[in-house]
Image (tube, rainbow, N blue to C red):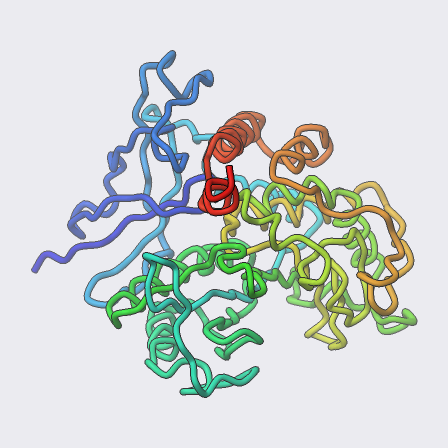
Length: 422
């Protein structure tokens, strides 16, 4: 009996595309799509070499990667790698970008490991965007204290059935905002799981008659949605290489240079961690969101946090990213920045102590807008060197066009503020 399988791949924005194919055609390479058309929120064509009108919109192939198949309700889902029709790797493949950075770490005998904390709002409606009422809300609530509709638990059950490795679910500080933590795994599997989790969360919510949003800051009267990334490095024997039990704070020289690299590339990382114009309404002081270019020991007001756990639980938490970030490009950028710090032997600056918003130990912080973040990435040739130049070119152009659309837009706020008096 023929069954259907969804073959998916993420674009440069972390959004899903693909085809549903019969299982007998799973290994067939010709799951064609048009390259640049699937890389942006709008359907304008980018005039970039090899990918658009000047190249005649060539086909690409989404080739199923064995080992990525998983149950997905009544069907199955698998992930694909992208190629030109002649078999050459497509540089715009965000999964390939992450794999390239992981290969650089593999040359040192180390495997990047990551896990994600996924925050999102449960919605009663989208027109207008409305938070789900949660009368029994409490911080770290579960059951009705997190979601009276039971949708959050249904999302967790579906995600676990799809082998996305759920660690736990709970409500956050704001009613209707919840968090799902995904287990740490090798960085590719973890990024794949974060990518798929956003899809399954929306599918389950809509079946339950509600909706979700991972948007950076969907409501002006509430905090934003973070996507914190917890990172470590594992050697060939499976040992956590961030550990040094002889060190006063218990972390290795590799860990210290890794953190220093994250701080050194702080502004450029924002282009991947805060990838929308809305992101910069979350990346402000007072949001616990990774604003300052600093690190701290178990300090949530630092962008880079080293939690108190040691031993196998030793990890580095990066707090800047929001739920609209591409898990693959974000993780590639973070491990690239960390590798940059290790390769250059960067020294770890002094940790932030206490409230960074009140008394920051640095004057560096995230850019004030997406456009400034893109300029920071364009200027950071060291971080760029870990990516294919075509990917950087197309990503920057996609996002600059997004900024231009925002600059040209007339918002409800402008109409409400000015039309009544002028």
